[in-house]
Amino acid sequence: MVIKMNKLYKQLDKQVANLAVFFTKLHHYHWYVKGPHFFTLHEKLESLYDEVNELYDAVAERLIMIGGKPASQLKSYLALTSLSEATEEKTPDMIQAILGDLKILATEFKELTLLAQDAKDEQTADLAIGAVTSFDKHIWMFSAYLG
Image (cartoon, rainbow, N blue to C red; front, side, top):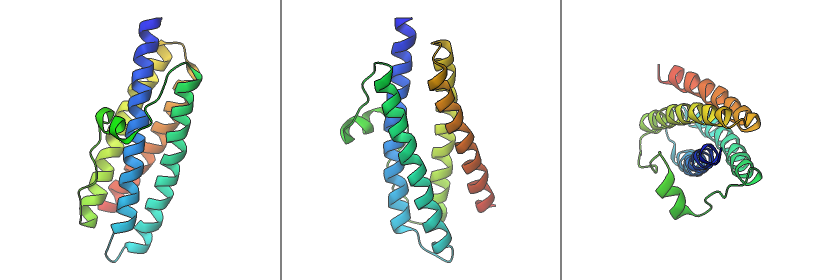
């Protein structure tokens, strides 16, 4: 059981890092988005980073509740994350990057769900399942936006 919990701790910690990086990236895009869809995207990105911020906090707190210790420094986040920092300058590229990140998050949160279920931690599994549901919806919406 110790090995299962250690794997779960590592995956939760990785998701804390992913969510911190994604939150920062979304903020960057929120500030720098341009073009005819500015108002719509500016508002959508704010809504999404608010949602990501809540999940970021919930995942970190869940890790603490079950005995783990989440990373909490930018250097640590960058070492752990599966995502990259924002480099895109054009709005369509920003949306494409968000879509790619959402797909990575959905995949990794599905893996987290399985690890949590294997460790008999249904509460963490429930948190991960809810996150995947949200990521899937955003994937659909951003894909529709891109056409």
